[in-house]
Image (cartoon, rainbow, N blue to C red; front, side, top):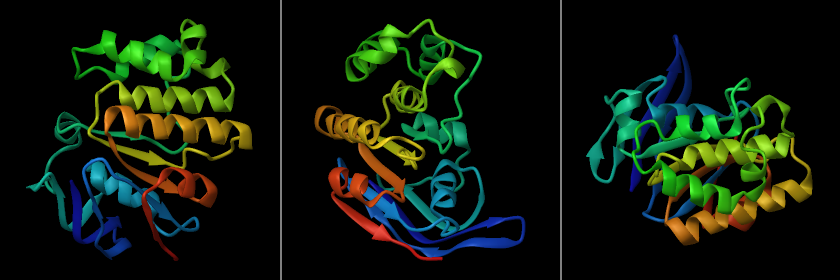
Length: 206
């Protein structure tokens, strides 16, 4: 489904990724493990079209290397970014609806994410900034699902969360894989979450 060939990525003149080759099959969950500074987040940004790259990126056999970010969204790539990046002064429900901006089937998707994370339905009129860290992470994942992705990118979904919340996030990701068949590329430092959710992993160093 996803394949990179000799992918290098840059911030200005600094090379952050150097000739990265990964592949992800349809319905597969793959983790990228490694310390801060290894370029894991840059890989996700490269797939989303947010940084300058050399090499090639393929999605379902099509070369998407030169597509703009919004064109990749239409190819059903969605990201749950590091730090969640919610609209803090908007309600839970409005954050979710923004995630469905390119998708007319928002009612069914809203029903699904509320079943996946019942706490979000209970707090749907609450401002995102007033929620706990765990609830905000649930919202970030749910928002990413509202566009009906075939490829879901998750950047450090366990960051800053208590172990009991990490376990609930892991269970949700397993449900997403089983019920929706979504392929996932998960950047993580938490080996336990990766072991529980991923089919396999790439381990990077700096």
